[in-house]
Every structure is written in C-alpha cells, then in structure tokens.
Amino acid sequence: MNYQLGLIGFPLGHSLSPSIHTAALKARGLQGDYSLFPISPEDKQGLKDLLTRVRAGEIHGLNVTIPHKQNVIGLMDELTPTAKSIGAVNTIYMRDNKLIGDNTDAPGFLADLKKVSNSSFIIPHSALVLGAGGSARAVVYALCNDGWNVTIAARRIEQAQQLVDSFANYQLQVVDFSSLIIHHSSLIVNTTPIGMTPNIEASPLPEMTTFAENTFIYDLVYNPRETKLVKDARAQGLSATTGLGMLIEQAALAFEKWTGSNADRAAMQKAVA
Ligand code: NAP
Image 1 (tube, rainbow, N blue to C red):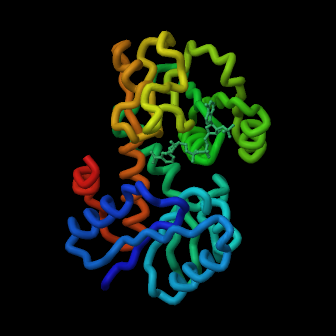
Image 2: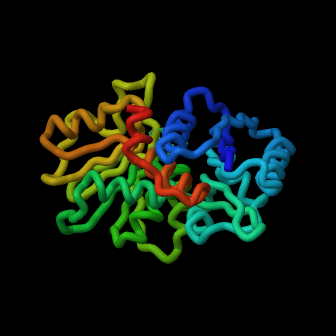
C-alpha cells in the first residue's frame, strides 16, 4: 500500500501536518505521502473534485482545516457522532464504500489534557473556556462529555449563545470576556488565537491575573512553543501547556483511522520539536 494522505485548507503555508504524518508513516515502515491541498473558500468544485479522488481510492485520508471544516459536511455520506455533535469535520476517510467525516480534535484535546495534567483535578470540576469559535466547539464537547462544568468566555455573547444552543443537552454558562473574573476554575482553556506568532507578547488574560491554586492552564496555541499565557501561569507556579500535544494527538488519531496502524506519537512529536 502506498498511502496518499493530505490536508485541505486555505492558506496552508505554515502547516506542521506534513512533517508529523511523514514521521508517522516512516516510524511504522509505511510507504506514502502527505500533500497540501490549498483550496480557496470559493472553489467549491475544487473541494468536490478532491473528494471524488477519495471515493475512487486514489487518496486514502484527508485532514481538514480552516475554512473548510464546516463546508465539507454536506459532501460526506456519513458523519461520526462526534463530528455531528461538534458540527465540524477534521478527518475524512472511506469505510464500507461511504465517505466518512470524523472529528479527532475533541478526543485529541482530551487525550492530551489527561496526559499532561496527570488526570485527577480538584473539586469543583469546573472549566473556563476562552473563546467560542471552531476549536472551542471541540473543546466544549470534549469537556462536557468528560463530566466538566463548563463556562464559556466570549467577546461576542451571541456567538457563545449559538454554541450553547447547539449543545442543548449540556449545562453551559456564558460570561463576557471583557468583564472576566478568574476565581475558582480548576481548568482554563484558551481557544482564542491571542498570543500566536507574531503577537507573542499578547495574552488572553492580564499578566497580573491571580489564578486559584492548582488551576491548570491549557493554551491551544502552539506557535510559539511557550505562549505568554503559559509563561505567566508557570511564573505563578502553576502547571500549563501549549497545544502542540493536542496537534499531535488529533493527527495520531486520524493516522490510525487511515492506516489501521498504531501511531508512534513520540516520533511524530520529535518531527516538530
Ligand atoms: P476561530 O474559529 O476563529 O475562533 C477564535 C475565537 O477566539 C472566536 O470566538 C473569536 O471571537 C475569539 N477571539 C479572537 N480574538 C479575540 C480577542 N482579541 N479577544 C477575545 N476573543 C477573541 O479560531 P479556531 O479555529 O478556534 O482557532 C483558535 C486558535 O486555536 C488558533 O490559534 C489555532 O491555531 C488554535 N488551534 C489549535 C489546535 C491544536 O491542535 N492545538 C487545534 C485547533 C485550533 P470573534 O469571532 O469575535 O473574533
């Protein structure tokens, strides 16, 4: 088998996915390539043509990133329950002659969170999620299914309210980002792009924020490797991580769906270290 894999998105200039998946293939002694497929948001035919190649068995697996995570939904034969609940697809493959849209961001986030936080959190089991965009949907879904009590802090309350409405089975609270008071959350997850290169001196929270003892900070931003938010939290003696582990985990879970082989996470991590 010569695995033809790739990523749909736009733009795709700085993607780490080719390095991660090339390392994953190599670590398992598998033949294949991971290509970038930059498809502009207007190019609906380009998207359909690429998916035709998956149906034909010419491409064995695709990742999907901004701006196509929602656009591809209507082009799938089936969505996994996770992709359906989140309303976004980040992984595509064929199963039983059907084109499947899956989402590995949510399980990828949770798996990495458990790994880096050594699991058991102090009571109350409460999480504060900063931002209400695409990745917040995956994070909120993952946390709610894991039994967390989630509050979403958004600058546009209507965006957060839409997120809450689409997760009607869960108890979610919404707060205004600008009047945020950090007190008792045992976990804070940043899903905004604040602090991402080149704005590395920015943080979604003021530098002087005092966190509760034992608060764990998870910043989805992974470029730079230590964000200002993570640096500030560590300066207060707290445990904190950036999102590289989630990036590796979501890639590993996609790789396992495509190839049926266990992903060598250490090799994947080493490729981008
Ligand atoms: P998105 O859909 O654009 O959502 C971003 C959210 O942040 C929106 O709610 C946005 O609000 C909010 N926001 C942006 N700037 C803000 C500000 N100055 N103050 C308050 N809120 C602000 O983006 P996304 O796809 O969720 O990605 C967000 C970040 O997560 C990116 O840095 C991305 O690289 C990272 N990410 C990492 C992983 C991983 O595997 N580690 C996976 C996915 C995403 P508005 O809509 O009002 O702008």
